[in-house]
Length: 181
Ligand SMILES: Nc1ncnc2c1ncn2[C@@H]1O[C@H](COP(=O)(O)OP(=O)(O)O)[C@@H](O)[C@H]1O
Ligand SMILES: [Mg+2]
Image 1 (cartoon, rainbow, N blue to C red):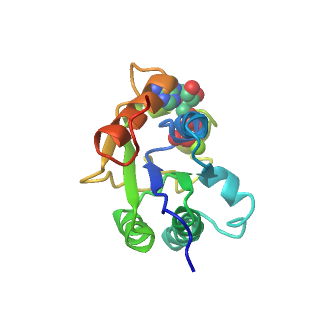
Image 2 (tube, helix red, strand yellow):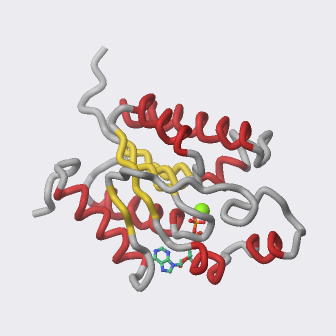
């Protein structure tokens, strides 16, 4: 069975509030404008459905990443571009996803903890510091930054749109996407 040309997976990893969801949504628009079928697989959203049974312990986080990787694989092999916005704190989970999906572009949204904590989009850092919640990535749960990401986005001192455009530019420069005319 032929499936047409394969797509690839853009896997955005980073601390909570780093900018994964915000950049991911803009990337979807940018790619759609170029005629690609891109789909956002957002960690928080998937936790309300497919991963609603999972917590935040290590095994649960690994299972969550594994499910997302499975869906991303199906999309990518059918010519779409899944854009994964997932903390995915463990190198091992990301390596597994890379091995399963094959065409895999790891994007490290490298916003430092201090800036993420300042943004605190969902107020979780504050609650973690107050001891109200446990297993908060960056506070009392580990985040293992990528060692060799294909793309590193420095989303500090840039707008979200500039960050997304930087990713697109890198995809063009490295041959994942044809350059826009
Ligand atoms: N360059 C940037 N890229 C992405 N987000 C940014 C940037 N600068 C500021 N922000 C802000 O940071 C926050 C990031 O939140 P979000 O995308 O939900 O993070 P995550 O999904 O990584 O937890 C948003 O409020 C966004 O407007
Ligand atoms: Mg998010």
